[in-house]
Length: 113
Image 1 (cartoon, rainbow, N blue to C red):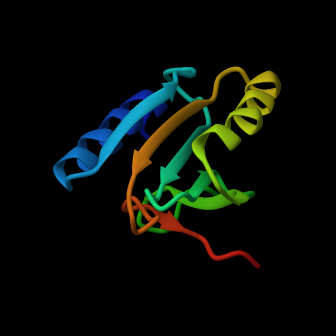
Image 2: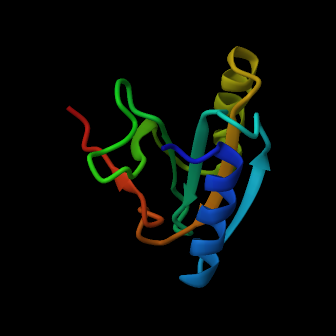
Image 3: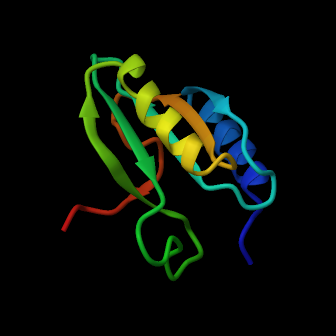
């Protein structure tokens, strides 16, 4: 069974806080099943944007899988146009930002093909 998007986002933020990371919801989407995008600010001038991979977004353990949806950019403000385009296409998306120097934020990120 898959968690509702809103519950997953709040649990992810709580887990981030427990690990000493700061995070915030940048855009609220559909509570039940909005797609979730995670912006990871590495605090070194680079930012990664993760989203659901094509195909199955859940692994065999039931964990969500992630893929980089755009190449790393130089600042969080450079992500804004991309998020705005996504929101025009799908107004139900969630966008969460977390600050993590490792660039992983505790997520399972798929390697590019």
